[in-house]
Image (cartoon, rainbow, N blue to C red; front, side, top):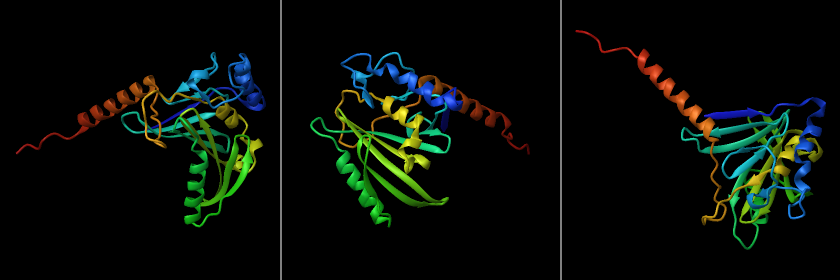
Length: 227
């Protein structure tokens, strides 16, 4: 099952409108100036798509593509704007320290074992990795970004022009800045992906469509042959 939702708006004013959506984030001194935010400190009054552990802000012309299993459990979240994409993941982390340094090194070693060298650079959120990988469609540039939060870590992977030029990320970067993480209070193994799910109304619609498809298949199936 693939769910896709595109935010309305756009044109040359798209980024200005998106910035206005997030301008209120500094309204209170206790609120961080940018995210990703923990749910306990997230600014109010912002429209977001609730995917369980991740709440994605509504930013004009950003399409949210979600791949989920028949039970509505999300396997992959990708934000798309034009030719740029940002794949998101969120993971459990220990209370005492962040895990992006270790995860970043593991990504580097994994790429190296596949014959790809990754270059480390300093980005808006700190150290990030840049790599060029070979895919069925040819060579593709990737930029890996990690943000440590209270008992969680968000990992983002940029593709397209945003992978080599952070300024090209535009509305996708605004989405990352406005992301909210709802980790929950239960204990989880370090680095375990936090659970993501389809919004209830979307899951119910998908179930209804699946049931209708099954009923239709049954009604058109041939009956038993007569002797």
